[in-house]
Length: 456
Image (cartoon, rainbow, N blue to C red; front, side):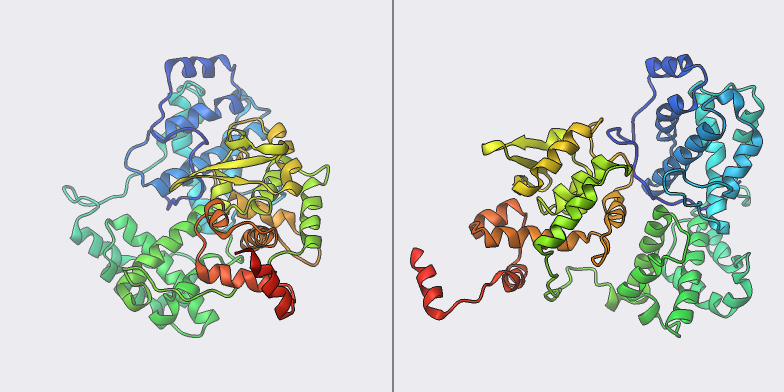
């Protein structure tokens, strides 16, 4: 089986990609008496040892393998002895739904191909860790992966092989007829970009052809200045109508950016881009904040720890989603008067005090957390995805950039010195601060304003 794989989720939390399975871990896996869930960490660690995979491909393989193993644990009673070949077929075909969300996996030809690509590698890892006997019927699945055929002595990065792959490629599904008139354009763009291998060339052609079809249907043009415009690339990549995994969306975005820099370099300058001031986002009101706190505190909903932490870290501390994702209970520090702060270790160290109204949420999240991170997911996009679950009637989902604006305005209204705010909130531009002041200014007469200025 072959397939196109791309990154979607990050590696297992707290484990570097170079982690190997120790003898003790392997023995513990054998002592798990055939438990599928008990073998998941060992199998994922074994998959991380595969050479020749890009970080994106390795991440997507880990995400797919974990999905497969969790599915097998559900349908086989968490016993390897109960696993049947038909279970792998059902998983590849997508004849199942996520028990937490009720959502079915992607049903596109590409999604199914990715799942078929992951199966033999997951089975090989299970055999290597001793979780699955090498003489079982299931073990035959490890031998179903085939190598791409090419003439003897020709490598995948041979220019002639790449040129031939580009020349011969064409869609193999229902898109073939509708995409015929666009293939020449797609081949030209990919050739100019210079894919590193024949397999990359075919993947890029598929992505570029999809983007051309989408632009022709949505925008009425195949002009590169429209197809490869940064905003249109993002709109196509995040099109909710496409049942793509997060990893494949990241791959699509990366490829179109590379193609755009070659085909339409004026849209993608290599140097720093001079960006004008963005329109200021409107911070949440006190009533809005109360609604989101209540949404996070609602009983009987899953991922309570993550919901509490997301609200406390964004509305309460102004953190960005990428900052909130990697933190855990160990990053909370005690401050005066029973208050808490969050220690951030990025470009430089800073401690962000949590607003008083959100301290209780952070404390409860710390008490509920059973690991070293608040977010269990391996996907760095988990905060953004969780924000959609915190939807409030009339407000929609929790918007993280509005939450940060709310945090900044709260400190401005509280009289926090600007140099202190700049330190705890991270770098704040003068333009952004000016926009936030527009939402914090209170009506005042000239005399009252002058009197307030007497403190200098």
